Image (cartoon, rainbow, N blue to C red; front, side, top):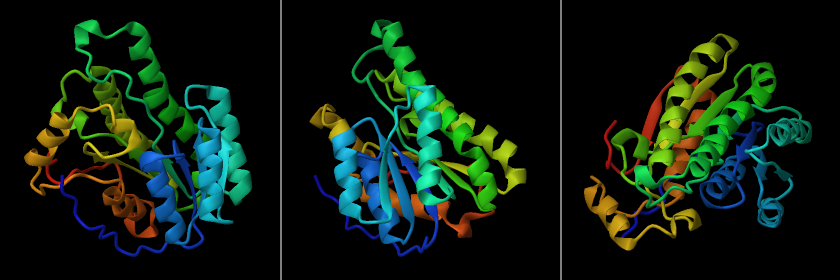
Length: 256
C-alpha cells in the first residue's frame, strides 16, 4: 500500500482559537497537531481522557484538553464553555467526533440501538456542539465551522448504513447552518474524507482498503495528514466567502 508525501502547505492561523472534538486520536489528533503548527490555540475534546491529556501535553502550552461526551447534551454545553474560557473565545470549530459501530452490517441486520447511538453522537452531537459554540463564533466576527463528514455519504457505501446516513445528515445540516449563520459572519463547510488509515478503521478488511486505493484517481492510501490542509484553509480568514460547501478529500475516489 503506497502513500503520497505530506504536502500540507503553510497556512498561518496565528492567534486563532479552535475547538476540535474527538481529538484524542485519529483524524482529530492530526488536525490538532496541524493547528498547533499553524500557530493556533487548540482545545481538544474527547471521552478518551488519558489519551487526550497526553496529546495536549505533548503539543505544548497552546493546547488544552477537555473531557466531553458528544452523546451527552450537558457534557457538550459544559465542555464548549470550558473550551471558550481556556482560550478566551472560539474562532473555529471542527466537528470531528463520531462513531461507526455499524461497519459490516447489512441494513436488515442493523439494530435500532446501534442506529440510535450513531445518530446520537454523529448528528445530534454535531448540532448541539455547534449550538453551544454559536455565541463565541459570532463574537469572533470571523467564525468558522468545519464538519467532518465522509465520502461514504456521497457514493452510498454498502453495509454501513447508519454511519452513511449520519454523515449524509451532517452534509445536509452543513448547508442549513451555513444559511442561518452566514449573516453573523460565520461560515459552515464540510469535508468528506475517504477511508483513512487510522486506529478507528483497523477493523476494515484489507480487501476494502485495496478497493478504495485502486478506485482513486491518486492510487495511494489516505493518511490523516492528507486532510489537514483543507481543514486549516476552511478555518482561516481567507475562506470568508466559502460556505455551505462539501469538499471531498479522498484522492478522487468520489469526484463531487
